[in-house]
Image (cartoon, rainbow, N blue to C red; front, side, top):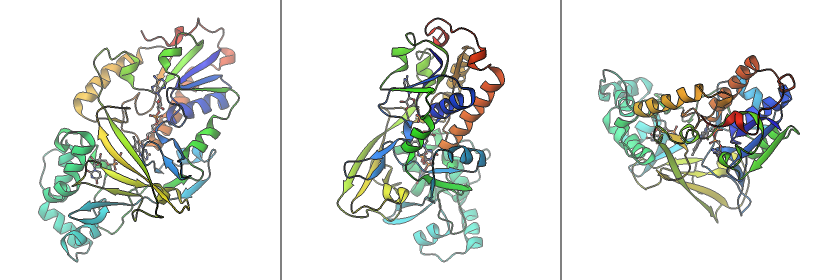
Length: 383
Ligand code: FAD
Ligand code: UDP
């Protein structure tokens, strides 16, 4: 007898489970088809005892005091500012492109004003910045675009930056100073004991039950529940009735090396060579001391788990059709990266889940005031 069936134990599902159980006293069942909690942020110790992220590097950063304060209830933090090098023309240079990137690549000695003028000479005027190509060529010109962005993006997305919404490459700024941090957010920390530990604390409430290795499809009719929070792919919920929404996937190749360190920073990007996009060395992120080191190569693919919604106008139109169906589906809330088809970072998903909780609180009585349960599973059956 559950007030809520929550599909997915990632950030979206876990934050809502915690809020509903803690603040409303609701009875919650969380299911995930994977054998673990944490969604894509799941981390664990590998065979060598090194803390690794199963689904690629997850670096927490946010400008939201509210999101940071909320998560701080479940974890201590380790300060960590992420730095990335890109291997270009045989050198390893800072990305986002900054003063040292350009000086290092071309053997120049520009200052910030000089670099601004250098960019201005090369930038290509674009009437309206629509695509991910426009974003970069209009700022730094075609040569740096080709070296740092074009091939990396083609690998990552299986399409040219000119075919992708501007929001994709807009995630990476251009700088004229020497700041080589990947992010400039006010809060940049890693959960001290890892993400999974943080999720365990979030979900440690007697009103929350967790069933892992269970698909929504298997239980939606047999488990009695009043309402559903769904954090999986929205097109799957509706049986792909308007066609499949594209999601980009990755194949992760994990390795442990018999050496203390593999590379100078947490992530090295490969924008000109290799089939993989980047290599992550976790000890930089976690601060762990260990005589060996573990790394992950990321190979983008179309097949496999859905990781990234693909930001393109036609995909957004298709999503909007599913969203209209979702809005017309009573007693089901769609939350998270896959269910709202948004290329969201972790903090944005937490913010979205907290906002959803506020809306639920405004519109729904608590379980104790809500009267008898509907028949088994009836509340969440897709129309
Ligand atoms: P998910 O974490 O995907 O959780 C959804 C869960 O639902 C999954 O566990 C899935 O198994 C389950 N599920 C789906 N359908 C069903 C079903 N039918 N039945 C049962 N269970 C189901 N963000 C950052 O802020 N910083 C980073 O550095 C960062 N790096 C990233 C690197 C990679 C490679 C990827 C892919 C993402 C990265 N992100 C990063 C984004 C981050 O992973 C997401 O913002 C966040 O994990 C989304 O949480 P979610 O709950 O929406 O989805
Ligand atoms: N990108 C690139 N070269 C780089 C880094 C990023 O072309 O060295 C582009 C690429 O299209 C990528 C996007 O910028 O998908 C966003 O980069 P980010 O590092 O935010 O990707 P994520 O960590 O979400 O995979």
